[in-house]
Amino acid sequence: MSSDPDQTPDKALAQALESAIDYAWQQAAVEGAGGAGRPLRLVVALSGGADSTAVLHAVSRYLGNRFTVLALHADHGLHPESGRWAEHCRQLCRRLRVPLEVESVAVSEVGNLEAAAREARYGFFARHLSSDDVLLFGHHQQDQAETLLLRILQGRGAVGMRYYGRLGQGHFIRPFLSLPKEQLVDYLTAAGEDWVDDPSNSEIHFDRNYLRHELLPILSQRWPGAVQALARVSADAGAQAALVQRYVAALPNQVSFDLVPHSRIEARVWLRAFLASRGHHRITDGAIDEYFRQQKDSGRAFMALESQDSDGAASLHAWRNELYYERAEDGSRMSWPDAGTPLPWRVRWRQQILEIEADHNLARGAVGYTGQLRMLDREQLIEMDDAMAQRLKKHFQRGQIPPWRRSGYPLVCDEQGLVCVPGIWQRETSAQADKLSGYCAIRWLNSKKVEA
Image (cartoon, rainbow, N blue to C red; front, side):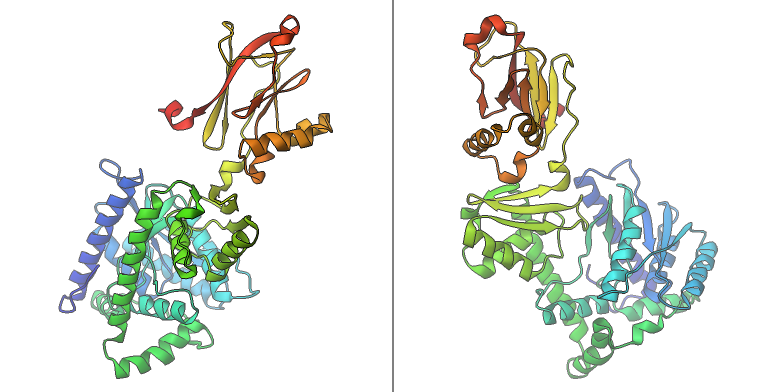
């Protein structure tokens, strides 16, 4: 990611692209996408400005014969000239013979307009990415310096833009993050390419523009290498964060709070790295501090985690000195067999599979049932038996089942009521042998071993 200031712009951009694609290829192979024999598609986030134009032109010039290339342009509709900018992108892509997708995105004008536009734009990008796609952004060294300063001044930590990450089903990379903007402009000038300028980029009531036009020039007058120095600080901080994430990524999604540092600041760093390793990068210090406050005060805590560049929305819980990270799909109820469906049954619940099969040999642990077996959840069973709520609560407490998991926990029933709370309790049926329809064995299986 380092750059040589003496390199010509074309060589600098070409080298940066090669390094970025090599890195993306390696990461995608590790994550199970792309890799040898599976060419990646390169998707360029094209605004029409100098930075993204330089990316598209360089990708087309240096990589167009090796990869499929696509450009994406989000029309925010926030400026009267936005239609002209979209047309400029169309003409550019026609000259470069690169397919272009243009979409008008809806941007909420309530609250932070910059953030809302970014969310709409990134949502558009994510919808167009498949698992073998790498999205390329045109961010450069000055963008990195601005991001670092902005986050420091907002109290969000000394971490700048990420070089590489996940977005939707695909990946993104910022190949020119270590290059000065001047090299991108010089490259386009030498290539004879034009670009559009968004007038809003000069409006200093936006925080980033104020840093760009007011603060950074003053800093650079006093310290001519300020932008490069800030970029190095950001790279070092990013490397340190990545190192911590590498260690916490190996932890399970359920962790004892005994493993969490006791110092408030260290605990914040630990949890930020834990969540970042699972794809959640934009968590505020306030949200983290509130989570730990709830956990300390009551032993219970909850934090909703939005879908960012992870595999989806998730949540963070605390209960009985345990931290639980759970993806939204883990809590969704899987399809259960209808009553009367012949055994065996295999039902997925979270990261496990519940297996119920007929047991004609009355092996140890077999449980008898009357009539047809059925599977119900807690609410369905309570509707049938008002007195069941308290009994189920005791069973779940004994089985250490967290409260938020209890509503969807699979319960095995028959015509007489509850037969089994899998893994926790099952009804004694030895005295009812003459009334039983059959016996079954009920056990949890490791879903990874079953799928292997």
